[in-house]
Image 1 (cartoon, each protein chain N blue to C red):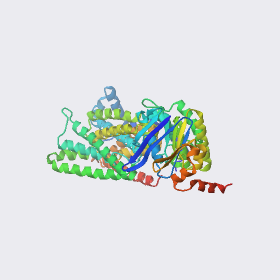
Image 2 (cartoon, rainbow over the protein chains, first blue to last red):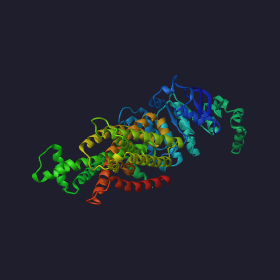
Image 3 (cartoon, rainbow over the protein chains, first blue to last red):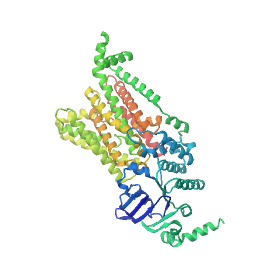
Image 4 (cartoon, chains in turn red, blue):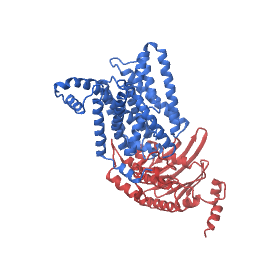
Length: 251
Length: 350
Protein backbone atom coordinates (compact mmCIF):
# COMPACT_ATOMS: atom_id res chain seq x y z
CA UNK A 1 0.00 0.00 0.00
CA UNK A 2 2.46 2.65 1.21
CA UNK A 3 6.16 2.42 0.46
CA UNK A 4 8.77 4.81 1.82
CA UNK A 5 12.17 4.78 0.14
CA UNK A 6 15.25 6.56 1.48
CA UNK A 7 13.26 9.39 3.02
CA UNK A 8 15.36 12.24 4.45
CA UNK A 9 14.23 15.55 5.91
CA UNK A 10 16.48 18.49 6.70
CA UNK A 11 15.57 21.77 8.44
CA UNK A 12 18.36 24.12 7.42
CA UNK A 13 21.51 22.26 8.51
CA UNK A 14 19.68 19.97 10.94
CA UNK A 15 19.08 16.43 9.70
CA UNK A 16 15.72 15.35 11.18
CA UNK A 17 15.24 12.11 9.23
CA UNK A 18 17.99 10.23 7.52
CA UNK A 19 17.45 7.57 4.88
CA UNK A 20 14.29 6.02 6.30
CA UNK A 21 12.71 3.15 4.34
CA UNK A 22 9.77 0.88 5.16
CA UNK A 23 6.61 -0.52 3.67
CA UNK A 24 3.11 -0.92 5.03
CA UNK A 25 0.67 -3.44 3.57
CA UNK A 26 -2.99 -4.11 4.18
CA UNK A 27 -3.85 -5.43 7.64
CA UNK A 28 -0.71 -4.08 9.28
CA UNK A 29 -0.53 -1.71 12.21
CA UNK A 30 2.87 -0.05 12.14
CA UNK A 31 3.98 1.52 15.40
CA UNK A 32 6.45 4.40 15.11
CA UNK A 33 8.47 4.24 18.28
CA UNK A 34 11.42 6.23 19.57
CA UNK A 35 12.52 8.86 22.08
CA UNK A 36 11.68 12.56 21.82
CA UNK A 37 13.35 14.14 18.82
CA UNK A 38 13.66 10.81 17.00
CA UNK A 39 11.78 12.26 13.99
CA UNK A 40 8.47 10.41 14.44
CA UNK A 41 6.24 13.47 14.05
CA UNK A 42 8.34 14.72 11.14
CA UNK A 43 7.82 11.37 9.46
CA UNK A 44 4.06 11.77 9.94
CA UNK A 45 4.24 15.31 8.52
CA UNK A 46 6.20 14.05 5.51
CA UNK A 47 3.59 11.35 4.89
CA UNK A 48 0.91 14.08 4.98
CA UNK A 49 2.87 16.10 2.38
CA UNK A 50 3.48 18.84 4.92
CA UNK A 51 7.25 19.09 4.63
CA UNK A 52 9.66 18.85 1.74
CA UNK A 53 11.84 15.76 1.71
CA UNK A 54 14.25 13.81 -0.44
CA UNK A 55 13.57 10.17 -1.30
CA UNK A 56 10.27 8.75 -2.38
CA UNK A 57 6.90 7.92 -0.82
CA UNK A 58 4.56 5.83 -2.96
CA UNK A 59 0.91 4.98 -2.39
CA UNK A 60 -0.15 2.03 -4.54
CA UNK A 61 3.10 2.42 -6.51
CA UNK A 62 2.38 6.06 -7.34
CA UNK A 63 4.38 8.94 -5.87
CA UNK A 64 2.19 10.69 -3.27
CA UNK A 65 3.22 14.08 -4.69
CA UNK A 66 1.39 13.17 -7.90
CA UNK A 67 -1.92 12.79 -6.05
CA UNK A 68 -4.27 15.77 -5.81
CA UNK A 69 -4.77 16.60 -2.13
CA UNK A 70 -8.42 15.57 -2.21
CA UNK A 71 -7.63 12.22 -3.88
CA UNK A 72 -4.87 11.55 -1.37
CA UNK A 73 -7.15 12.43 1.57
CA UNK A 74 -9.69 9.83 0.42
CA UNK A 75 -7.01 7.17 0.84
CA UNK A 76 -4.87 8.46 3.65
CA UNK A 77 -6.08 10.39 6.67
CA UNK A 78 -3.80 11.96 9.21
CA UNK A 79 -4.43 13.03 12.77
CA UNK A 80 -2.00 15.53 14.26
CA UNK A 81 -0.58 15.35 17.75
CA UNK A 82 -2.06 18.53 19.18
CA UNK A 83 -5.07 20.63 18.34
CA UNK A 84 -6.01 24.16 19.21
CA UNK A 85 -9.18 25.65 17.80
CA UNK A 86 -9.81 29.39 17.96
CA UNK A 87 -13.52 29.48 17.14
CA UNK A 88 -16.65 27.93 18.62
CA UNK A 89 -17.17 25.22 15.99
CA UNK A 90 -19.32 22.34 17.20
CA UNK A 91 -17.87 18.85 17.46
CA UNK A 92 -20.10 17.77 14.56
CA UNK A 93 -18.90 20.63 12.34
CA UNK A 94 -15.27 19.63 12.90
CA UNK A 95 -16.01 15.96 12.23
CA UNK A 96 -18.08 16.86 9.15
CA UNK A 97 -15.02 18.46 7.55
CA UNK A 98 -13.54 14.98 7.28
CA UNK A 99 -15.93 14.42 4.37
CA UNK A 100 -14.38 17.33 2.43
CA UNK A 101 -12.38 14.97 0.21
CA UNK A 102 -15.62 13.50 -1.13
CA UNK A 103 -17.21 16.85 -2.01
CA UNK A 104 -17.08 17.98 -5.59
CA UNK A 105 -18.13 21.11 -7.48
CA UNK A 106 -19.05 24.56 -6.22
CA UNK A 107 -21.12 25.20 -3.08
CA UNK A 108 -20.68 21.60 -1.92
CA UNK A 109 -22.82 20.45 0.93
CA UNK A 110 -23.04 17.48 3.25
CA UNK A 111 -24.95 14.60 1.63
CA UNK A 112 -27.16 12.01 3.33
CA UNK A 113 -24.38 9.41 2.88
CA UNK A 114 -22.01 11.81 4.65
CA UNK A 115 -24.50 12.20 7.48
CA UNK A 116 -24.88 8.43 7.89
CA UNK A 117 -21.11 7.98 8.11
CA UNK A 118 -20.73 10.93 10.47
CA UNK A 119 -23.53 9.65 12.76
CA UNK A 120 -21.93 6.20 12.86
CA UNK A 121 -18.46 7.52 13.71
CA UNK A 122 -19.83 9.94 16.32
CA UNK A 123 -21.56 6.93 17.87
CA UNK A 124 -18.52 4.67 18.01
CA UNK A 125 -16.22 7.40 19.32
CA UNK A 126 -18.74 8.23 22.05
CA UNK A 127 -19.21 11.79 20.81
CA UNK A 128 -22.84 11.54 19.68
CA UNK A 129 -24.39 12.91 22.90
CA UNK A 130 -22.12 15.98 22.89
CA UNK A 131 -21.91 16.62 19.14
CA UNK A 132 -23.43 20.13 19.39
CA UNK A 133 -20.92 21.28 21.99
CA UNK A 134 -18.29 23.86 21.12
CA UNK A 135 -14.82 22.39 20.62
CA UNK A 136 -13.52 25.26 22.75
CA UNK A 137 -15.53 24.03 25.68
CA UNK A 138 -14.59 20.35 25.81
CA UNK A 139 -11.79 18.47 27.53
CA UNK A 140 -8.47 17.61 25.88
CA UNK A 141 -9.58 14.00 25.56
CA UNK A 142 -12.86 14.93 23.89
CA UNK A 143 -10.98 17.19 21.49
CA UNK A 144 -8.61 14.32 20.69
CA UNK A 145 -11.56 12.04 19.98
CA UNK A 146 -13.15 14.74 17.82
CA UNK A 147 -10.12 14.86 15.52
CA UNK A 148 -9.86 11.07 15.53
CA UNK A 149 -13.52 10.96 14.45
CA UNK A 150 -12.71 13.48 11.69
CA UNK A 151 -9.91 11.21 10.45
CA UNK A 152 -12.24 8.19 10.56
CA UNK A 153 -15.06 9.82 8.55
CA UNK A 154 -12.52 10.31 5.77
CA UNK A 155 -12.96 6.54 5.38
CA UNK A 156 -9.34 6.05 4.28
CA UNK A 157 -7.34 2.93 3.53
CA UNK A 158 -4.47 4.14 5.70
CA UNK A 159 -4.88 5.95 8.97
CA UNK A 160 -1.84 7.87 10.19
CA UNK A 161 -2.06 8.90 13.82
CA UNK A 162 0.38 10.98 15.82
CA UNK A 163 -0.15 10.01 19.46
CA UNK A 164 -3.83 9.03 19.10
CA UNK A 165 -4.39 8.59 22.81
CA UNK A 166 -2.67 11.78 23.89
CA UNK A 167 -4.75 13.35 26.70
CA UNK A 168 -6.98 10.29 27.04
CA UNK A 169 -7.60 8.53 30.32
CA UNK A 170 -7.05 4.78 30.56
CA UNK A 171 -10.62 3.80 29.74
CA UNK A 172 -10.62 5.87 26.55
CA UNK A 173 -7.13 4.66 25.63
CA UNK A 174 -8.44 1.10 25.80
CA UNK A 175 -11.62 1.95 23.91
CA UNK A 176 -9.82 3.87 21.18
CA UNK A 177 -7.21 1.15 20.64
CA UNK A 178 -9.91 -1.52 20.50
CA UNK A 179 -11.91 0.62 18.12
CA UNK A 180 -8.87 1.05 15.87
CA UNK A 181 -8.13 -2.67 16.00
CA UNK A 182 -11.69 -3.41 14.86
CA UNK A 183 -11.47 -0.72 12.18
CA UNK A 184 -8.28 -2.31 10.86
CA UNK A 185 -9.96 -5.68 10.42
CA UNK A 186 -12.98 -4.39 8.51
CA UNK A 187 -11.55 -3.90 4.99
CA UNK A 188 -8.18 -3.61 3.28
CA UNK A 189 -6.79 -1.15 5.74
CA UNK A 190 -3.59 -0.23 7.54
CA UNK A 191 -2.63 2.02 10.45
CA UNK A 192 0.58 3.90 11.10
CA UNK A 193 0.74 5.44 14.54
CA UNK A 194 3.21 7.20 16.77
CA UNK A 195 2.88 5.65 20.22
CA UNK A 196 4.94 6.49 23.28
CA UNK A 197 3.48 3.77 25.46
CA UNK A 198 5.54 0.72 24.57
CA UNK A 199 3.07 -1.71 26.13
CA UNK A 200 0.32 -0.38 23.88
CA UNK A 201 2.66 -0.51 20.89
CA UNK A 202 3.60 -4.09 21.59
CA UNK A 203 0.06 -5.24 22.30
CA UNK A 204 -1.78 -3.66 19.39
CA UNK A 205 0.93 -3.22 16.74
CA UNK A 206 1.81 -5.81 14.15
CA UNK A 207 4.97 -4.06 12.93
CA UNK A 208 7.27 -1.46 14.44
CA UNK A 209 9.72 1.12 13.19
CA UNK A 210 12.13 2.12 15.94
CA UNK A 211 13.76 5.47 15.35
CA UNK A 212 16.50 7.39 17.08
CA UNK A 213 17.96 10.75 15.99
CA UNK A 214 16.29 10.42 12.60
CA UNK A 215 17.68 6.96 11.85
CA UNK A 216 16.07 3.56 11.80
CA UNK A 217 17.24 1.43 14.71
CA UNK A 218 14.96 -1.49 13.93
CA UNK A 219 12.18 -2.36 11.52
CA UNK A 220 9.93 -5.41 11.15
CA UNK A 221 7.57 -7.46 13.32
CA UNK A 222 6.74 -5.61 16.50
CA UNK A 223 7.92 -8.42 18.81
CA UNK A 224 11.28 -8.63 17.04
CA UNK A 225 11.94 -4.90 16.81
CA UNK A 226 11.05 -3.98 20.37
CA UNK A 227 13.70 -6.23 21.92
CA UNK A 228 15.92 -5.34 24.83
CA UNK A 229 19.01 -4.40 22.80
CA UNK A 230 17.18 -2.28 20.27
CA UNK A 231 15.37 -0.39 23.03
CA UNK A 232 18.62 0.27 24.91
CA UNK A 233 20.07 1.50 21.63
CA UNK A 234 17.17 3.85 20.93
CA UNK A 235 16.33 5.13 24.41
CA UNK A 236 19.83 5.01 26.01
CA UNK A 237 18.39 3.14 28.99
CA UNK A 238 17.27 -0.37 29.90
CA UNK A 239 13.62 0.13 28.97
CA UNK A 240 12.94 -3.60 29.16
CA UNK A 241 14.23 -3.93 32.70
CA UNK A 242 12.43 -0.81 33.86
CA UNK A 243 9.11 -1.91 32.36
CA UNK A 244 9.44 -5.32 34.00
CA UNK A 245 10.17 -3.67 37.32
CA UNK A 246 7.16 -1.38 36.99
CA UNK A 247 4.73 -4.07 35.97
CA UNK A 248 5.97 -6.63 38.52
CA UNK A 249 4.45 -4.38 41.20
CA UNK A 250 1.01 -5.07 39.75
CA UNK A 251 1.33 -8.82 39.92
CA UNK B 1 -20.22 30.80 29.12
CA UNK B 2 -21.88 29.90 25.85
CA UNK B 3 -24.29 27.11 26.65
CA UNK B 4 -24.90 24.02 24.58
CA UNK B 5 -28.43 24.98 23.61
CA UNK B 6 -27.27 28.31 22.24
CA UNK B 7 -24.74 26.55 20.04
CA UNK B 8 -27.25 23.97 18.87
CA UNK B 9 -29.61 26.82 18.01
CA UNK B 10 -26.88 28.55 15.99
CA UNK B 11 -26.37 25.32 14.15
CA UNK B 12 -29.96 25.48 12.98
CA UNK B 13 -29.63 28.97 11.55
CA UNK B 14 -31.71 28.75 8.41
CA UNK B 15 -33.21 30.61 5.50
CA UNK B 16 -35.76 32.42 7.68
CA UNK B 17 -32.95 34.01 9.66
CA UNK B 18 -31.38 35.35 6.46
CA UNK B 19 -34.79 36.73 5.54
CA UNK B 20 -34.93 38.59 8.87
CA UNK B 21 -31.42 40.00 8.28
CA UNK B 22 -32.47 40.95 4.75
CA UNK B 23 -35.61 42.76 5.88
CA UNK B 24 -33.64 44.71 8.50
CA UNK B 25 -31.12 45.66 5.80
CA UNK B 26 -33.89 46.88 3.49
CA UNK B 27 -35.50 48.96 6.25
CA UNK B 28 -32.13 50.54 7.10
CA UNK B 29 -31.55 51.13 3.38
CA UNK B 30 -34.84 53.02 2.98
CA UNK B 31 -34.21 54.98 6.20
CA UNK B 32 -30.75 56.02 4.94
CA UNK B 33 -32.25 57.21 1.68
CA UNK B 34 -35.12 58.98 3.44
CA UNK B 35 -33.09 60.87 6.04
CA UNK B 36 -31.04 63.84 4.90
CA UNK B 37 -31.11 67.63 4.67
CA UNK B 38 -34.46 67.31 2.92
CA UNK B 39 -36.51 64.81 4.89
CA UNK B 40 -38.69 62.46 2.92
CA UNK B 41 -41.22 60.16 4.56
CA UNK B 42 -40.45 56.44 4.69
CA UNK B 43 -43.35 55.53 2.38
CA UNK B 44 -42.62 58.30 -0.12
CA UNK B 45 -39.05 57.02 -0.28
CA UNK B 46 -40.27 53.50 -0.98
CA UNK B 47 -42.63 54.90 -3.63
CA UNK B 48 -39.83 56.86 -5.34
CA UNK B 49 -37.39 53.91 -5.31
CA UNK B 50 -40.12 51.57 -6.58
CA UNK B 51 -41.09 53.90 -9.41
CA UNK B 52 -37.42 54.45 -10.32
CA UNK B 53 -36.86 50.70 -10.59
CA UNK B 54 -39.94 50.00 -12.69
CA UNK B 55 -39.98 53.37 -14.48
CA UNK B 56 -43.47 54.24 -13.24
CA UNK B 57 -44.48 57.95 -13.46
CA UNK B 58 -44.69 59.72 -10.08
CA UNK B 59 -47.27 62.19 -8.77
CA UNK B 60 -46.31 65.88 -9.32
CA UNK B 61 -45.35 66.61 -5.66
CA UNK B 62 -42.77 63.81 -5.60
CA UNK B 63 -40.89 64.74 -8.78
CA UNK B 64 -38.40 67.08 -7.05
CA UNK B 65 -37.88 64.63 -4.22
CA UNK B 66 -37.33 61.92 -6.76
CA UNK B 67 -34.41 63.72 -8.38
CA UNK B 68 -32.68 64.17 -4.99
CA UNK B 69 -33.23 60.57 -4.11
CA UNK B 70 -32.42 58.98 -7.45
CA UNK B 71 -29.41 61.04 -8.48
CA UNK B 72 -27.79 61.87 -5.12
CA UNK B 73 -28.86 59.67 -2.25
CA UNK B 74 -29.46 56.31 -3.92
CA UNK B 75 -26.01 55.91 -5.50
CA UNK B 76 -24.38 56.94 -2.23
CA UNK B 77 -26.39 54.59 -0.04
CA UNK B 78 -25.98 51.70 -2.48
CA UNK B 79 -22.20 52.31 -2.60
CA UNK B 80 -22.05 52.43 1.19
CA UNK B 81 -23.96 49.13 1.38
CA UNK B 82 -21.73 47.48 -1.23
CA UNK B 83 -18.52 48.71 0.43
CA UNK B 84 -19.82 47.48 3.82
CA UNK B 85 -20.68 44.08 2.35
CA UNK B 86 -17.33 43.82 0.53
CA UNK B 87 -15.18 44.80 3.51
CA UNK B 88 -17.11 42.44 5.78
CA UNK B 89 -16.71 39.43 3.52
CA UNK B 90 -12.99 40.30 3.27
CA UNK B 91 -12.62 40.55 7.05
CA UNK B 92 -14.52 37.32 7.60
CA UNK B 93 -12.46 35.47 4.99
CA UNK B 94 -9.14 36.69 6.40
CA UNK B 95 -10.19 35.78 9.93
CA UNK B 96 -10.78 32.23 8.71
CA UNK B 97 -7.70 31.99 6.53
CA UNK B 98 -5.38 33.23 9.28
CA UNK B 99 -7.35 31.57 12.10
CA UNK B 100 -7.28 34.94 13.76
CA UNK B 101 -10.43 36.80 14.92
CA UNK B 102 -8.62 40.16 14.78
CA UNK B 103 -7.58 39.95 11.13
CA UNK B 104 -9.06 42.66 8.91
CA UNK B 105 -7.92 44.92 6.11
CA UNK B 106 -7.30 47.74 8.55
CA UNK B 107 -5.62 45.79 11.36
CA UNK B 108 -3.34 43.99 8.91
CA UNK B 109 -2.35 47.24 7.22
CA UNK B 110 -3.75 46.10 3.87
CA UNK B 111 -6.09 49.09 3.53
CA UNK B 112 -3.20 51.49 4.17
CA UNK B 113 -1.17 49.55 1.59
CA UNK B 114 -4.01 49.98 -0.89
CA UNK B 115 -4.16 53.70 -0.08
CA UNK B 116 -0.43 53.94 -0.76
CA UNK B 117 -0.98 52.41 -4.18
CA UNK B 118 -3.80 54.82 -4.94
CA UNK B 119 -1.76 57.84 -3.77
CA UNK B 120 1.19 56.80 -5.95
CA UNK B 121 -1.13 56.58 -8.93
CA UNK B 122 -2.55 60.07 -8.24
CA UNK B 123 0.87 61.64 -7.58
CA UNK B 124 2.52 60.17 -10.63
CA UNK B 125 -0.56 60.34 -12.82
CA UNK B 126 -0.69 56.59 -13.45
CA UNK B 127 -3.91 55.79 -15.26
CA UNK B 128 -5.29 53.66 -18.04
CA UNK B 129 -6.59 55.56 -21.07
CA UNK B 130 -10.40 56.01 -21.21
CA UNK B 131 -10.93 54.64 -17.68
CA UNK B 132 -10.81 57.60 -15.29
CA UNK B 133 -10.72 55.59 -12.02
CA UNK B 134 -8.68 52.67 -13.30
CA UNK B 135 -5.21 53.91 -12.26
CA UNK B 136 -6.04 54.31 -8.58
CA UNK B 137 -8.12 51.14 -8.61
CA UNK B 138 -5.51 48.87 -10.20
CA UNK B 139 -2.71 50.33 -8.09
CA UNK B 140 -4.83 50.00 -4.92
CA UNK B 141 -5.51 46.32 -5.72
CA UNK B 142 -1.89 45.63 -6.57
CA UNK B 143 -0.60 47.29 -3.40
CA UNK B 144 -3.26 45.57 -1.28
CA UNK B 145 -2.06 42.20 -2.60
CA UNK B 146 1.63 43.01 -2.18
CA UNK B 147 0.94 44.29 1.34
CA UNK B 148 -0.88 41.09 2.35
CA UNK B 149 1.91 38.96 0.89
CA UNK B 150 4.55 40.98 2.69
CA UNK B 151 2.77 41.04 6.05
CA UNK B 152 1.90 37.34 6.06
CA UNK B 153 5.35 36.23 4.86
CA UNK B 154 7.05 38.34 7.51
CA UNK B 155 4.68 37.11 10.24
CA UNK B 156 5.27 33.55 9.08
CA UNK B 157 9.06 34.01 9.22
CA UNK B 158 8.95 35.50 12.70
CA UNK B 159 6.35 33.14 14.14
CA UNK B 160 5.12 30.18 12.11
CA UNK B 161 1.80 29.98 13.95
CA UNK B 162 0.68 33.42 12.66
CA UNK B 163 -0.35 34.37 16.18
CA UNK B 164 -2.61 37.32 16.91
CA UNK B 165 0.11 39.40 18.52
CA UNK B 166 2.64 39.02 15.71
CA UNK B 167 0.16 39.74 12.93
CA UNK B 168 -1.34 42.79 14.62
CA UNK B 169 2.08 44.17 15.52
CA UNK B 170 3.38 43.78 11.99
CA UNK B 171 0.12 45.25 10.66
CA UNK B 172 0.48 48.34 12.86
CA UNK B 173 4.14 48.82 11.93
CA UNK B 174 3.39 48.31 8.24
CA UNK B 175 0.52 50.83 8.44
CA UNK B 176 2.85 53.41 10.01
CA UNK B 177 5.45 52.72 7.32
CA UNK B 178 2.91 53.05 4.49
CA UNK B 179 1.44 56.21 6.06
CA UNK B 180 4.91 57.78 6.24
CA UNK B 181 5.47 57.09 2.55
CA UNK B 182 2.03 58.54 1.75
CA UNK B 183 3.03 61.72 3.66
CA UNK B 184 6.39 61.83 1.87
CA UNK B 185 4.71 61.55 -1.54
CA UNK B 186 2.13 64.19 -0.55
CA UNK B 187 4.92 66.61 0.37
CA UNK B 188 6.90 65.89 -2.76
CA UNK B 189 4.01 66.04 -5.20
CA UNK B 190 3.05 69.58 -4.15
CA UNK B 191 0.87 70.20 -7.22
CA UNK B 192 -1.29 67.18 -6.37
CA UNK B 193 -1.65 67.89 -2.63
CA UNK B 194 -5.24 69.00 -2.92
CA UNK B 195 -6.24 65.98 -4.96
CA UNK B 196 -4.42 63.55 -2.66
CA UNK B 197 -5.74 65.14 0.54
CA UNK B 198 -9.29 65.12 -0.82
CA UNK B 199 -8.92 61.47 -1.72
CA UNK B 200 -7.26 60.31 1.54
CA UNK B 201 -10.06 61.93 3.56
CA UNK B 202 -12.10 59.15 2.00
CA UNK B 203 -15.77 59.67 1.53
CA UNK B 204 -18.59 58.05 -0.34
CA UNK B 205 -20.31 61.42 -0.60
CA UNK B 206 -19.95 61.90 -4.33
CA UNK B 207 -20.66 58.29 -5.29
CA UNK B 208 -22.01 57.72 -8.76
CA UNK B 209 -23.84 54.92 -10.51
CA UNK B 210 -20.55 54.04 -12.23
CA UNK B 211 -19.14 53.28 -8.77
CA UNK B 212 -22.25 51.24 -8.00
CA UNK B 213 -21.75 49.14 -11.14
CA UNK B 214 -18.02 48.58 -10.47
CA UNK B 215 -18.60 47.62 -6.83
CA UNK B 216 -21.54 45.34 -7.71
CA UNK B 217 -19.62 43.45 -10.39
CA UNK B 218 -16.53 43.02 -8.21
CA UNK B 219 -18.57 41.96 -5.16
CA UNK B 220 -20.66 39.58 -7.24
CA UNK B 221 -17.64 37.81 -8.71
CA UNK B 222 -15.29 37.84 -5.71
CA UNK B 223 -18.14 37.26 -3.25
CA UNK B 224 -19.41 34.24 -5.19
CA UNK B 225 -15.96 32.65 -5.28
CA UNK B 226 -15.41 33.32 -1.57
CA UNK B 227 -18.82 31.82 -0.75
CA UNK B 228 -17.92 28.74 -2.78
CA UNK B 229 -14.80 28.42 -0.60
CA UNK B 230 -16.77 28.36 2.67
CA UNK B 231 -15.86 24.77 3.44
CA UNK B 232 -12.17 25.45 2.81
CA UNK B 233 -12.36 28.54 5.04
CA UNK B 234 -13.92 26.40 7.79
CA UNK B 235 -10.94 24.07 7.45
CA UNK B 236 -8.46 26.97 7.62
CA UNK B 237 -10.32 28.44 10.61
CA UNK B 238 -9.73 25.17 12.45
CA UNK B 239 -6.10 25.04 11.37
CA UNK B 240 -4.01 25.03 8.22
CA UNK B 241 -2.40 21.69 9.05
CA UNK B 242 -5.81 20.13 9.60
CA UNK B 243 -7.00 21.65 6.31
CA UNK B 244 -4.15 19.89 4.52
CA UNK B 245 -4.98 16.62 6.25
CA UNK B 246 -8.58 16.62 5.06
CA UNK B 247 -7.51 17.28 1.47
CA UNK B 248 -7.61 21.06 1.01
CA UNK B 249 -5.10 22.38 -1.51
CA UNK B 250 -3.90 24.92 1.05
CA UNK B 251 -1.50 26.85 -1.16
CA UNK B 252 -4.03 27.28 -3.96
CA UNK B 253 -6.93 28.25 -1.69
CA UNK B 254 -4.77 30.70 0.26
CA UNK B 255 -3.60 32.39 -2.93
CA UNK B 256 -7.15 32.64 -4.32
CA UNK B 257 -8.53 34.10 -1.09
CA UNK B 258 -5.68 36.62 -0.83
CA UNK B 259 -6.17 37.75 -4.44
CA UNK B 260 -9.94 38.14 -4.01
CA UNK B 261 -9.53 40.03 -0.75
CA UNK B 262 -6.96 42.34 -2.36
CA UNK B 263 -9.25 43.05 -5.30
CA UNK B 264 -12.20 43.82 -3.03
CA UNK B 265 -10.20 46.00 -0.62
CA UNK B 266 -8.45 47.72 -3.54
CA UNK B 267 -11.75 48.63 -5.20
CA UNK B 268 -13.37 49.74 -1.92
CA UNK B 269 -10.38 51.90 -0.97
CA UNK B 270 -10.13 53.48 -4.41
CA UNK B 271 -13.83 54.41 -4.35
CA UNK B 272 -14.46 55.31 -0.70
CA UNK B 273 -11.02 55.73 0.84
CA UNK B 274 -9.85 53.70 3.77
CA UNK B 275 -12.79 52.79 6.05
CA UNK B 276 -11.39 51.04 9.09
CA UNK B 277 -12.70 48.18 11.21
CA UNK B 278 -15.85 47.26 9.21
CA UNK B 279 -14.33 43.90 8.32
CA UNK B 280 -13.45 43.33 11.95
CA UNK B 281 -16.71 44.35 13.62
CA UNK B 282 -19.28 42.73 11.34
CA UNK B 283 -17.98 39.14 11.19
CA UNK B 284 -17.41 39.29 14.95
CA UNK B 285 -21.01 40.29 15.68
CA UNK B 286 -22.34 37.87 13.06
CA UNK B 287 -20.27 35.03 14.54
CA UNK B 288 -21.98 35.62 17.87
CA UNK B 289 -25.39 35.22 16.18
CA UNK B 290 -24.86 32.47 13.59
CA UNK B 291 -21.74 30.70 14.88
CA UNK B 292 -18.35 30.33 13.18
CA UNK B 293 -19.42 28.09 10.28
CA UNK B 294 -18.45 29.96 7.10
CA UNK B 295 -21.39 28.53 5.16
CA UNK B 296 -23.58 30.77 7.32
CA UNK B 297 -21.06 33.36 8.44
CA UNK B 298 -20.15 34.73 5.01
CA UNK B 299 -23.68 35.27 3.62
CA UNK B 300 -24.77 36.79 6.93
CA UNK B 301 -21.65 39.01 7.00
CA UNK B 302 -22.50 40.37 3.56
CA UNK B 303 -25.99 41.41 4.66
CA UNK B 304 -24.93 42.68 8.09
CA UNK B 305 -21.86 44.46 6.70
CA UNK B 306 -24.07 46.43 4.35
CA UNK B 307 -26.46 47.24 7.22
CA UNK B 308 -23.66 48.22 9.60
CA UNK B 309 -21.95 50.60 7.18
CA UNK B 310 -25.27 52.19 6.11
CA UNK B 311 -26.04 52.86 9.79
CA UNK B 312 -22.52 54.24 10.32
CA UNK B 313 -23.00 56.49 7.30
CA UNK B 314 -26.38 57.62 8.62
CA UNK B 315 -24.85 58.51 12.00
CA UNK B 316 -21.97 60.31 10.25
CA UNK B 317 -24.47 62.38 8.30
CA UNK B 318 -26.91 63.33 11.07
CA UNK B 319 -24.88 63.58 14.28
CA UNK B 320 -23.40 67.00 13.49
CA UNK B 321 -26.09 68.07 11.02
CA UNK B 322 -25.71 70.12 8.82
CA UNK B 323 -21.97 69.26 8.94
CA UNK B 324 -20.96 65.72 8.02
CA UNK B 325 -18.46 63.46 9.74
CA UNK B 326 -16.24 61.19 7.64
CA UNK B 327 -17.76 57.69 7.80
CA UNK B 328 -14.41 56.25 8.93
CA UNK B 329 -14.69 58.21 12.18
CA UNK B 330 -17.84 56.32 13.13
CA UNK B 331 -16.54 52.89 12.09
CA UNK B 332 -13.22 53.49 13.88
CA UNK B 333 -15.02 54.59 17.03
CA UNK B 334 -17.16 51.44 17.16
CA UNK B 335 -14.38 49.25 15.76
CA UNK B 336 -11.76 50.29 18.29
CA UNK B 337 -14.07 49.34 21.14
CA UNK B 338 -14.92 45.97 19.57
CA UNK B 339 -11.20 45.40 18.85
CA UNK B 340 -10.34 45.82 22.53
CA UNK B 341 -13.17 43.46 23.52
CA UNK B 342 -12.05 40.74 21.08
CA UNK B 343 -8.39 41.19 22.02
CA UNK B 344 -9.27 40.92 25.70
CA UNK B 345 -11.37 37.81 25.16
CA UNK B 346 -8.71 36.20 22.94
CA UNK B 347 -5.99 36.83 25.51
CA UNK B 348 -8.21 35.48 28.26
CA UNK B 349 -8.82 32.42 26.09
CA UNK B 350 -12.57 32.88 26.15
